[in-house]
Amino acid sequence: MNLVIASGKGGVGKSMLTSTLATLLAEKHAITAADCDADTPNLAIWLGGIDKWDKILPVEASAKPKIDLDKCNGCSLCAQKCRFGALKMKAGKPVLNPFLCEGCGACEAVCPQKAIKLEPVQNGEIKIKKNQNGFSFVSGQLLPGETGSGKIVDQIKAEADKFNSEIVIIDSAPGTGCPVIAAFKGADFAVLIAEPTPSGFTDMQRTLDIVKHFKIPYGIVINKWDINSELSTEIEKWAGQNFLGKITYDKKIFKAISSLTPILKTDLKAKEEIENIFHNLEPKIAGILK
Ligand code: SF4
Ligand code: SF4
Image (cartoon, rainbow, N blue to C red; front, top):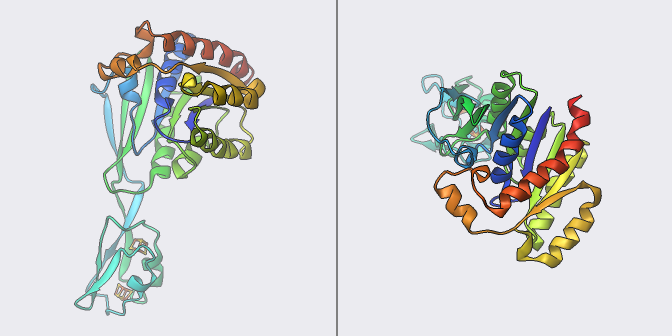
């Protein structure tokens, strides 16, 4: 099964929750963890191991135009049709700014001289560990300035699937964009985590719209519930039977993570609270695992 951990916005504890649930799940199941937040992957930090990768693979999940200037007659159609402003005419010939190019292919399609051809470029890398805290782990990252985060998520998931684990636990990017949709593709269960702030709640509801669109069963977790106990109670009531639990705000969590100490190796309150969330999650995914 694919278990996706997602949130409406960044910095709400998604990777903390994923890393801890992954370690707890691995005590009973063969699992693979996949960090699919390709713009800012940090699951390795929460798992306490940022080095010693077994494999690092280049990813070519993007394409950029290659222009044959000998064939080009300088008509400027490509520059006119590029809605991202990535092509500018200079001295009668198109010049590409690769950082603005989205690889859409419009320039190739309109060139009357067939002088443009889209060619694959490396836009990221995937790192793999066969054993991180007792399970396999795949993490992906876009290169600076590159596009195609949705496509790289597809490739991270494909690499994770190669381990043939019972469960792939996916740390999604936050929000509602391409990498999030790609993370939810084929999901069997989603856990959404939010902070009890007005924007935290509404952002989470936007992500929940995607979950509901794909008819994925889900659970709700509140992090830092005590920064706004009133709104926290409101979210808990709103979540109803989908509520999985809540985690207390604790500055010591940041100290633990800055020394690469996973939550389960601490005696923090968050450890017990996430264990409780895990116990509430188990019966909800048991039917899917059968
Ligand atoms: S591929 Fe698209 S974004 Fe890139 S230069 Fe061509 S038209 Fe512009
Ligand atoms: S559309 Fe083709 S021929 Fe025209 S300027 Fe661009 S590359 Fe040159």
